[in-house]
Length: 147
Image (tube, rainbow, N blue to C red):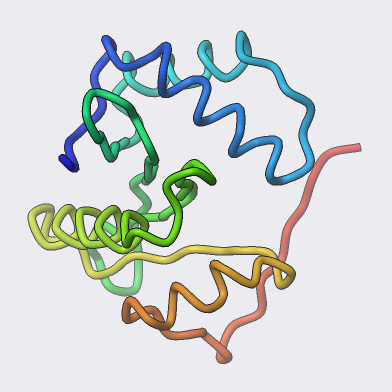
């Protein structure tokens, strides 16, 4: 088992995983959209994607986006996506992917990492506190989307 940064040569397998991730959150399957989205992220280098590979099979991934904290005058990472294929769950791969994300935070001298998950995501809501994330009860999360 290897945790490493994704490369363009991983796109076909990674796109299938990403499509499954999107379906987990209620989106319709669309491998083409998944592949184009990931190809753009990797080409533009506007996110970091780490993958879990077992015997040349991609079993999971984590994707992070750089943000900045003005008050902390520092980089801050958004752990936006974390997914492990259902066949490979329960083996600790999610924790290893989170550990890799933590390494990125430290190596980039960032002040921290944040994430959001749905309240109904029982697995995530148990996993994140186990890996050192603390629920921020001091802030309100707001969102605006255009009509």
